[in-house]
Image 1 (cartoon, helix red, strand yellow):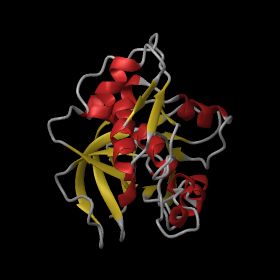
Image 2: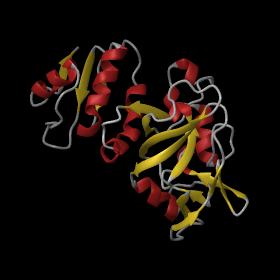
Image 3: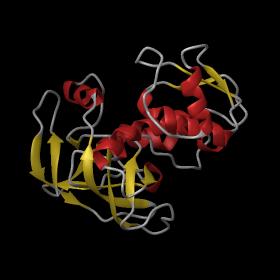
Length: 239
C-alpha cells in the first residue's frame, strides 16, 4: 500500500509504497476509507511530540476490516470500523484496575511506534517502519490491535466516522457509579459519552461546549436528549 511517511524531524512527508505484514494474533488489517489530520501529527513532524521516526503518521481514521489475526472476536472481514488511538492490552495493572486509558503496554507501544508486541507491521526498504499510535492512518491499509477497532454501521460515511476515534477515550475515564464526572466536552463526542455514561450507571453528567452552551446533534439516548434541553440552564442532567 501507499503511505505518507515522515523520515525525520521537520522533514516533508513522502507518499511512498510500503510493505505491510499480515496481522498477528489479536490484530486486525484495515483498508482505510478516511483519515483525520491532527495537530499531534504536526507535533511529531516538528519534534514537539517525540515519536520514533521514520514512521507512518496519523492516529484518527475509519475503514473496513480486510483480515483478522488469530483470536480476534470483536470484528470480522467486511466490518466497518472507527480506529481508537490508545490501544489497551487488557492485562496490565491499569487495565485491570478500571483505567484502560492508562494502559502500560499501550503507552509503551505508542512510544515505540509499534504494536502491542513492540514491533511495527509496516516495512520500507526491508526495514521496520514505525506507526503512530499503533495505527498509521496516513496509509491505504494498516494493521492495528483488535482493541483499537470500534465497529460501526456500514451506512455511516467514513468521512464523518473517522473524527470520532479520539473521543472513544473519554468514556473510559469514568468509573461505574461515579457522579458528577465531566463527560461532555464537544458536540461531536457528546452522544458517545452520553451512551457510555448511561451504560456505566453514571449518576450525573455535565457538559461544556464550544457553541454557546448548545449542541446541535440529533438523536441519541434519553440522557443525551435531556441534556440538550438543560444545557442552557445548569449544564447538568440526572440519569
